Length: 271
Image (cartoon, rainbow, N blue to C red; front, side, top):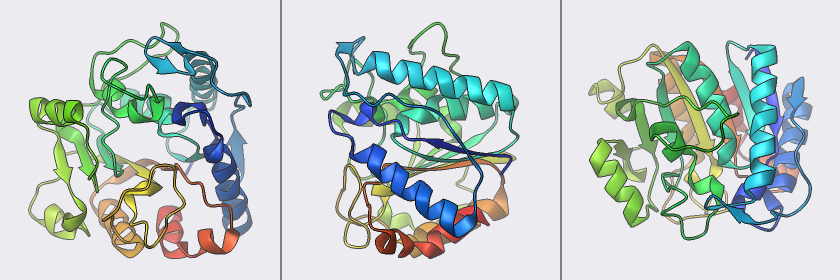
């Protein structure tokens, strides 16, 4: 990848900072294993201050997204690899790649839809909203430039915990949803069910995995996919698309041996 990023934003997930510590543990493992030279975007250390515009920690989150946007504008990468942090950091990352390729395919490996809006979210947690901001005409701040993805190019992969407003949005916009039983993705790709595009971005929230195999994530959901199927699916995407970026997010595991147990998945992401 042209640019390796470390963005441990955590306030979008609530009042506790497990995602910050988990992101640091991921960074330490990847640095040790793959000798990555990572650019770090600074994050606030304090807890979210207030709910504003329907988002808990709006002020802290916005300042971090703007810093990440500035890094991308300065570095101008062709491809990115990112460790985080919460899913909200995808807004400037995916927007950057969409500016370069409007037909970008977006594979969203996640147990959740991340399709709530500030108006529909009961928790006001921003990590449940980024895909909605990326596909809908929602306003966050005039300084943050958000590019809109074509919903027909989005594949919700491994989703199994969707709120009623998210289901309504999925139905209205005909977003593809592949549940855990669809994995690995080889058959779907062979059936031409995947988006027609030259390049793809791969979002990996580790809660897409089955908790019986990897349980230390921010929001675990039962009946997930296994790491081997996820690795195989990424391999298949690589065969069919040029990869614009990959992100690995929402880890809370701190033990290196447990992180290393997914070495096959990590190797596929880095290949």
